[in-house]
Amino acid sequence: MEAEIRKAVDEAVKALREGGLILFPTDTVWALGCDASNREAVQKLISITGVKSNKGMILLVPDMNMVYKYIKEVPEIAEEVVEASDTPLTIIYPKALNVAPEVIADDKSVAIRVVTHPFCTAMLKKFGRAVVTATEGFTEGKYPTLFEEFDDAVTAKLQWQANPMLEAGFTGKPSSILYLGEGAVVKIMRK
Image (cartoon, rainbow, N blue to C red; front, side):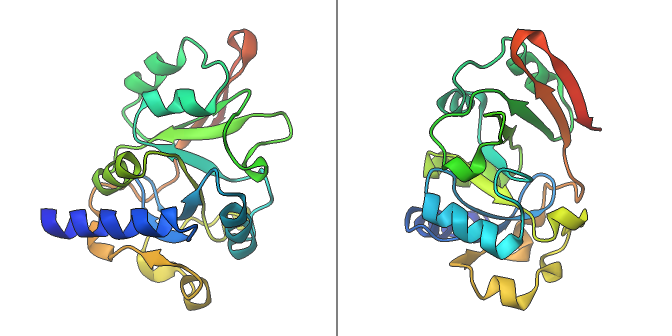
């Protein structure tokens, strides 16, 4: 199993470095993703998923250290909140940096989740950059919990897709979302 995961990580990272789109399980649901800094790839992701530019997209990172690459000033409480959460938690941070403009919201914020899924974490560490994700049908409130729920027309446009055996370690439901704004503003966006 470990050899299969290493092979899958290598293949996914190769696709990401080539500007490709990938389909993979996260610690929440299955997602389509690409290099968050590659504007052309992000535009393809938006086109395929139907999400609105700067809406419904989340950066995935393997640890808090990587969060600092994408946020001008990480609120002090952020690390404590991430460590205290026992379920997947996406945090919306102000003042995004180093990502394609389409990923940044109108208020200059960006959503980031530190993942705990074994495959996802290994892939992100090896890639060394954030992966931006969008979920097919996100705008309709549908979250694909099974590999089979992705449309063949969508998967045909991907450079790489994970084997469903990599699902172990995901919850099958979306993460909670918390907004951490400037001046210690905290808002629960989704429980």
